[in-house]
Image (cartoon, rainbow, N blue to C red; front, side, top):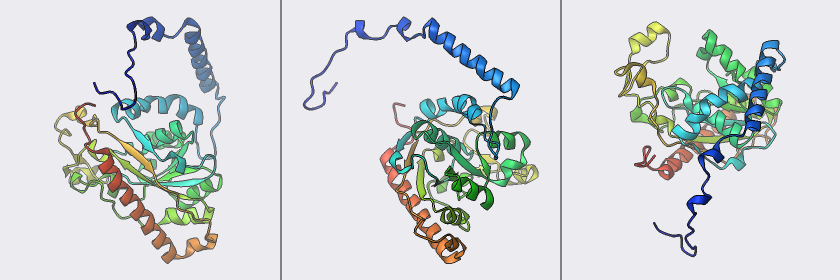
Length: 307
């Protein structure tokens, strides 16, 4: 084993390593956890918890939903975040990211990243389809998501919330593997107009790793239309392996938050200028594409030999 230049190797005696008994929680810690769990269950049963005007249930999100998906973030995808300094500590901002992965796990990983590492809840703007499905719609609202519309975006940003948007929509998340890391069209720039009206910065964000979790090599278009879905993917493992094909591949993920793009230099009325909105939307897209290209090179192989 090589030793870093200028440092002496240190040998940690076996006796100094934490024993199995030392790693186990004490009786007092177990009692505290049980008391916290019982208190949580009591609040849920009695309705003694708060939701905001959008239906966001912060306690349920923190204590249950994020706990369930955090192992994917930490151990399966081994997500690494860069330039968190570009996320404001307590003021409003619009986080604009690329969308990919066949299933939108990138949205969930972005939510965990900002919750755990920036101490900010992310209020994601979702597509209409999400809110047409009863169970998914209810869960989305509970975890802080809302419909991707002007009214909701404006209200959240003016409240000082951190709002997340994926302008590519289904065109990005459902694109074939052959077009990985190539940004799709960003629509008409409604997210830019909302940022201008609220006077908040736009944080361009690149997510590398999601493209490899379900490599899309085909599409069951007829069946997708029958089910009312934008696409029904064929991957190397789905539908060939059935439910096992839904297990995402353990690609290495990196998320980088770019330098904020200011909008407070414009008057709110500038949001009604289509040429300004188009140019700023195009600029955001170019910045994210450049971040993606650089971050992809920095990450290297999606599946390193030693995971």
